[in-house]
Length: 326
Image 1 (cartoon, rainbow, N blue to C red):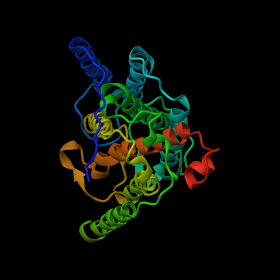
Image 2: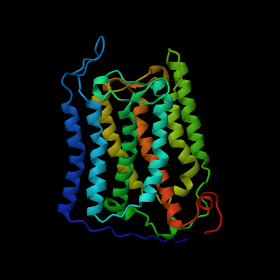
Image 3: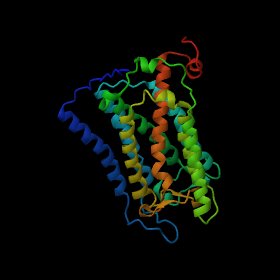
Image 4: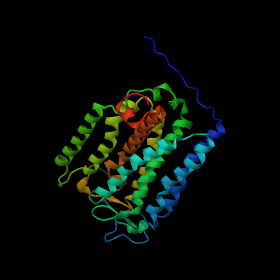
């Protein structure tokens, strides 16, 4: 059987325009990173007793520019300049669904998973959380993180890698039976990964504990995959997703390995980790290497499903559970 292929022509971009975009991408990472690094006044050491007040004054607060500046540059400049029309409803629906996951992580489990030893790196405004408050920067961190992930993906999908994008009005995106479709392999992988983490913790780590943080991350990424992957698979711009993951992973590793852990902006409770650490990065738990990859994957999955729902014009019940187009 012959398979018909269709190549969508990419929007022509001049070499100079491409160069400016590349420089813009570098700038929106280098500038806030440079400002944040400038807050580090002494070499990263673990204080014997307490954290000196002048170690990294407001370092965590200023470091939020690593998300805030890309949001502003892409959302207020690049997308309007390039004529990219973003579905505000799809964007807001996605953020409205994803941000509570980050908020719940802090609100329910921060007292079990994390520590915040260097109070001087924050505004010292505590936000509500079970077991004691958390720095207000934590909630801003997750909100801006999801927004940055989504805006980077949208820009790559709609402009930089538009040749690999599925148009919003295409038959592939609009016509479907239902959006909620169980994906058994995703469940199997989630069970295997969680089981492996628990076994490793019990066999190879001598101290008592449970890898609750890893379990939460797997559930956060696995739930959308189990319920949405079959419907999202044909419409996700996978090249845009891969590049988004790379950019976010680069930012997160710079953030955590270079600044957050060495300077005590936040830390991790060993009893809730798997027990595998990257020693060269101030004993960064292996969970943190994958957390933003999981976040990017889940966010894009939800966004593309919301876009299919909105593009089809169906009511939510018919779109997700099946039924006639209204």
